[in-house]
Amino acid sequence: MIMEHHRGQWGSNIGFLMATVGAAVGLGNIWGFPYKMGASGGFPFLIIYIALAVLVGFPIMLTELAIGRKSGKSVLVSYQNVAGGMGTFLGFLAIISPLLILSFYTVLGAYCIQYVCLNFAELIGVFSLSSISGAQSFTDMLSNQPLAIGSTVFFIAICYLIIRGGIKDGIEKFNKIGMPALAIMLLIVIIRAVTLPGAFEGLKFMFSPNWEPFSSVQGFLKVLSTAGGQMFFSLSLAMGITVTYGSYLSKKESLVKNSLIIIISDTCVAIMAGLAVLPAAFALGGEGAELSGPKLLFITMQDVFNSMGAFGPIFGILFFLFVTLAAITSAIALVEVLVTFVIDHQVAKGRSPKRSRIVAIACLIVLAEAVLVAADGLGSNGLWIPFQDTGMTLGGTWLDFMDFISEGVAMPLGALVMSILVGWVIGPKVIRNEVSLEGNTMGDGLYSFFSICIRFVAPVAMAFILYGQVTTFISPA
Ligand code: PHE
Image (cartoon, rainbow, N blue to C red; front, side, top):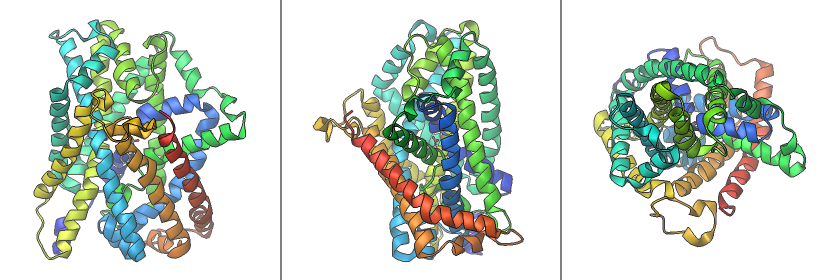
């Protein structure tokens, strides 16, 4: 009874879905997927991405939801309940990774907020953003450390206020308004982008089949590893998020249906983000515009808005609000992993945890590491000292380093260990039992499919993705 009181539960399945899709839809969908798809084969890349999402993403997501809901506890305890000591390793991995990701995710969210404000200032005529290039405004932003830190504090404060409200009255409530708002803003930006003269080139870049990356075996393997890494990050797997959010889900809901909806929605938003950014970048971004990563958003897209005339700042506000929302809904999920862990730990020790205090402490810890990344200005202020002369990508900046440990190693390693654990140690039956509750079933066909994927396909794919991630990060910068 007391435990129920501290934990709470999703108010509805749709609320759970909004929150989980919100956690999956983030910067990766907007600045990673469209460019990677265009540069790695276009339509054939999409087919490979979807195949990997079905064969690897789906079984891992279903496993995470089932493990979380089975114990109804934090990610650490959930893994321990099914796997003992190995679960402790997995659990801690899934608590540390979100913390590392948050160190830069919050700073990137803060830059989005700055761009919302700057476009607003342009709209009301107090600042002339369009008279400076996107490159210049972003350079100014990176080098202004007090502003970078201040806006990061602001971003984290928003997350604090949402998470403090709890699962149902905080996170679910925010996502139920935020996600539809995000979809509407995205649709408006897409309509504007695809109707710009010259937009077709962007669509061609993203969709038209390009067999060049498939011309050699190495090329094909590279496409596989790019698609796998992207799928994995985009679905927020092995981050404790799906286990944590699943632990608040009622036993009567269908885990299979929910997993599919999350995966389909995330992929649709990634494709839609491509429709919003690439046509505009090709039409108005200028020669040699950057098409991926932070520069796509913070330089190219701002150049696009600068060249749109009177309506530019309005689309700028809408677009950056959309990205800010996508970042907030992912960041709150990451913080909640830690918060749920501490709350459950305290309850187990017989204490009465105070949610708002735990959320405040978690946010302060995130702030401490985010300050480093913000002050470093994504590397442009040169704060990073260790590894600097190794010549490896991971030695570039604080952001690269945090990203390497989390996205490069911890996430794929966690999923690899988990697929082996479920496939070979505890057995896929455990997942089937949790899926088949209160009238839900997992038919023999689906169970065979799931077992083959989790035992054979997922471990091989994850080992390969892990290898791909590590080699990308340690390759010469
Ligand atoms: N899935 C998010 C994205 O696409 C990133 C993310 C990864 C968020 C892991 C939370 C956890 O940007």
